[in-house]
Length: 151
Image 1 (cartoon, helix red, strand yellow):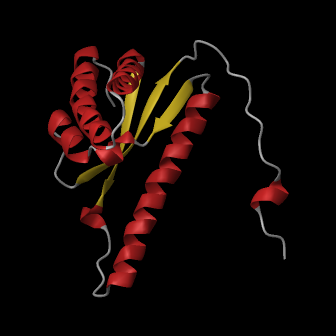
Image 2: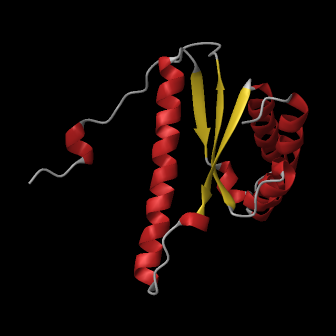
């Protein structure tokens, strides 16, 4: 959990370097890159609390075959995602707003270095948590029949 403004700013700057490099490689126009990086940095720095969820493989079961080892890794990722969902639900229940971003997946080494994380920790998701400035209108949801198979 990061609350300190200087740490959030340092992390935002470090991640922005990776983001800019990737966007340049993708051929994104410089003015669009600048706008995206500005928005990304503002979101992180302005959030009262930034929570980083990491996966730690050091206590996972180990299997001799690749199939089961991949399944173990997927279960660990699912566990991190489930924890993230619970975090957002708890924040909401407490009257807070939160947003989950997956940008740490693209800049794991930078985050680990900037925050001096243990070597076994793999950044997976980042949450910006605080009181919402406004309540957005609910988005239209797809009906269950369009996203499910009934047999």
